[in-house]
Image (cartoon, rainbow, N blue to C red; front, side, top):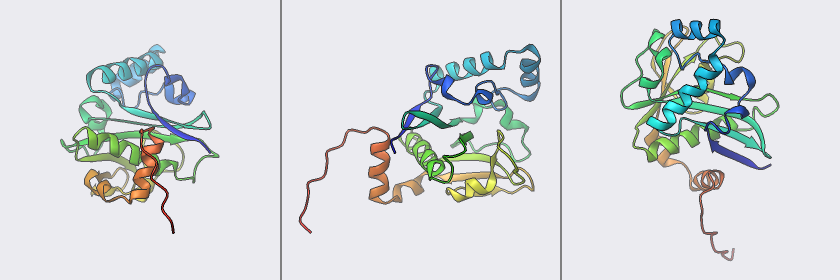
Length: 205
């Protein structure tokens, strides 16, 4: 099974699920988001947001392909680019962190470790860019796929609660913990990210 994680750009935006391409839950504040939906322009607003963040800050997402089929994605950005984050009872996101906004994996591809690989890929990207942590708002009462990720899924991939709340806790993943990943995980991630690497010499057993 060939897996690839590719930076999200305007060129592959159409590979996101249809409902996610026109969802501006995180990208706009609640009032502007409602206005965009009423005006029928959320897809244009989404494209404009991604374009602006790419130009100003750089890569803000990854699209996951399995055997060249798009099966999931993850979106992240500093909280200054995420207006909706201020509407949460456990805000604000810490100034040294980037916000993990949302992620999605298609049914049939869940339970294969893709969620963990997505988080690890984001972590490596942000470590290279000098950030200390990723934070996310979790949904402690999650029942079905939505814009806010289930809190228990976040804890399963290494996040820890820093601001408890019965519905929307804020969770944090310290990026320095990724430095202790095993070498084989690092190698797998580097291959996944397409890093050019010399093959290790074969050694006798």
